[in-house]
Amino acid sequence: MIASERRTVPLDEGLSKTVAQALFHREDRSHGGLAGAPKFPQEPLLLFMLERGIRDNNSNA
Image 1 (cartoon, rainbow, N blue to C red):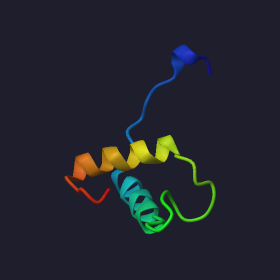
Image 2: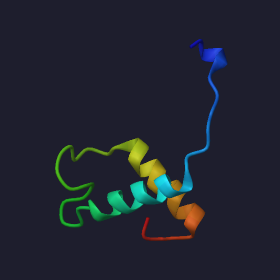
Image 3: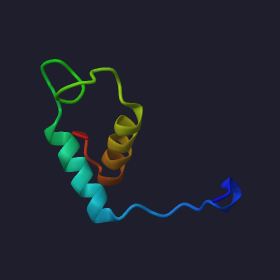
Image 4: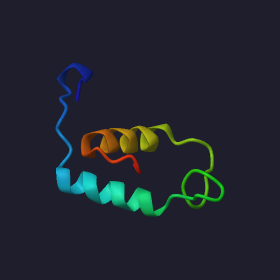
């Protein structure tokens, strides 16, 4: 596929909720980040949770 032919497809809402719940349950409140390695910031996951929190008006995300 050529880059100019790429198109975006909205993420399925059910899948988005499932992923958000899974990430929420992996939160490591003692050491920060998500449970397990790596501990450095995982920007795509943080941005996903931020977007999800804004969409759902959920300050926990």
